[in-house]
Image (tube, rainbow, N blue to C red; front, side, top):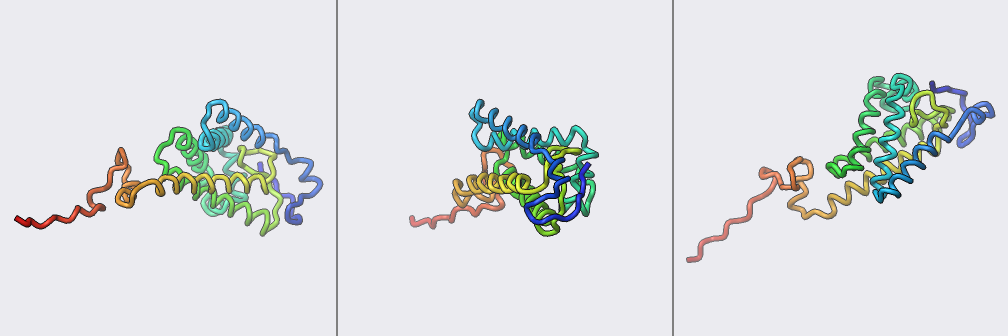
Length: 204
């Protein structure tokens, strides 16, 4: 369960809170994901995919506890509680997308949006409202502190999402870019969105 220990100066925590915090779960997840990605030569997308999939699995272990803890600081979950149970599904989908290379533009934009919302939530809760909270990133009942590490995780999602989306858009000719949202195999343009070539006049 998340715990609120009262306001504290930015970047600091009370003695009681500091004693109860632990970065071990976060270090374990990202360390393991990095080693697997390195061993399998998956690159940065593979690392991100492994990390997101592992984080989602920890949330699924006790989704009720996660949703309750998540709602203490997430901007959407505070207003719409069921989002706390949807978030792990979205996170797992992004992780699988990074690993499998599915629909790069959609996965990139999804990572960008979720990361941006997460980063805003952390800044609002920790640095603006100055709350000392535990992070639900490694599941409910975690003792990982909500703060700089959580913010860095969300910023990484934003950066990876931007890189993937821009990489797709930037390598395609303009005539094929509308097809990115069509879901058509092979990146074929949507006929209704592509202008036919002008008909040449008959000079005979």
